[in-house]
Image (tube, rainbow, N blue to C red; front, side):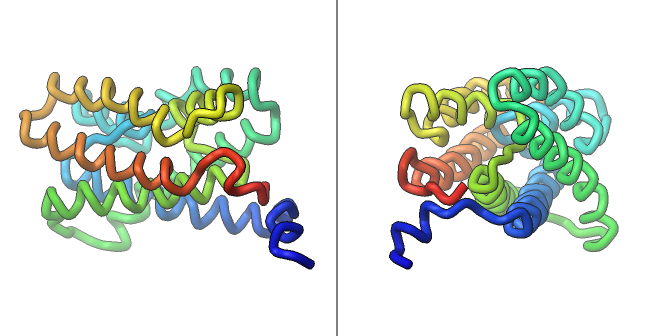
Length: 204
């Protein structure tokens, strides 16, 4: 079987399950590091962190809440399979953000390291989820829809929306933290933009 034929083969259900588990684990660990660094990022993850800092509620609660309207959008535009995978992914990430502090104990995360590493992990986690027909809801769904309809890179579309979300952090965070968060969000979206382009990966 040629390399092209292999690339066109769909993932098996076992591969999809493993992709969902590894993608959500990496994304949740990234979200945990961002939370510990008092940093935000783009997308609904960033909104969840932002609202968590503003209200004092854990990101494990805020992340699913901000995604509720986008689940309806996913069902309308992407169908039951994608929506179910996305709901499971969001719930897994939310649950795992509660597990990491228990397993790691009381750790002090240096903000620059935590923000940049958190975004790298979240970006790789998202990339895995995208390639297994899932997402973490919200802006990810919008970005994927734009990519499918217009051919624009999902990473660049999400980056533009994320700029607005990160700027909103000025309402609850000092400007150095916001600038660091913006740099981290750029890192995350560059990972997506450089590795998830239309036509480059077809093994869905």
